[in-house]
Image (cartoon, rainbow, N blue to C red; front, side, top):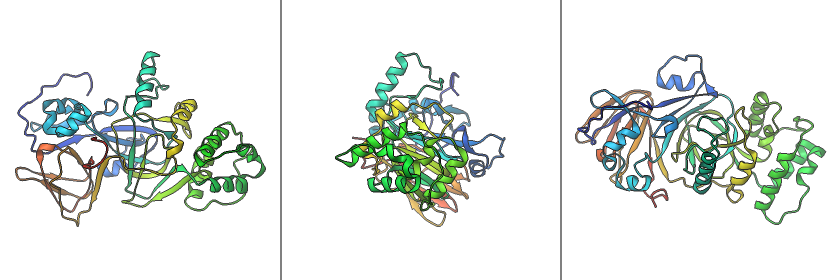
Length: 390
């Protein structure tokens, strides 16, 4: 959609609902079936990894106007940012849609990665701009000046790693499962857990394993994650990540947040993601993409490695058997995605029929609304009481 001129219809009724055309992202770790089934489309042989709903330039969503034409979301917002986003979001985000909403399907493990906070994102973006690294250059790490935090909500059982394990668990796992070859990793003294994590990780980056064969079996789901990593990245030392990162299997409907500077990797499954409007990712392993280990070490937050926090966005999964009425506190835009069945959305003035795979923008001016029918919905919005708007 970029680079085109659009006829903007200023008579849009922002109390209505708008269907969206998400941006499709094809990556090597994606699935040939999962998102395609939800969207009701045939696979074209490419691994569809994500669909994006938001106004980020790297994956701009289209908005279907009342006359049937489609325009980029950023241009749509310019029609009346206050009525579409709500005044508070409009002021805080300067007319940019305040979050990025994704549907993600991982057939293969994603990279071992970390996201920057706002200060690092701004500095990194400006530095790469000065150095002439183009936005489509594989070495480009900072695509925007926004810090990145996110939350995943599982649709299927979802395997992931996030945050360092307790210190004693890490030492025990390495000593019992790798034996003498790991001695150099722990050749240091430390006075706090945070100091341990930093020194351990620095040493692990220098570590050259003689073998990835473990002298025992990890508990589930760590053992399953380890086996998946070895099968896809047999020569990458980050296959040993289950020995030092927390391993999880989220069940459908369960969620987990990832804050800025928080080390993690998504391994397998289908989920929703709600995040700040950012595409900044620093990688150091488990990938065929560009890795930037010095930058990972620079932005990794060792004070925030074991626990996740409130990312500032609200989400809700609504099942077909539930009656749902939006609350009166709704003052900002929402995106609604139908991931199963058919249903409808209505307010005092408008009604729209919905089917599986539909993505809907609910402007702030649409006010309270009702969801009905047999569909399963996912609704995402800026948190009413979080720190995103402060």
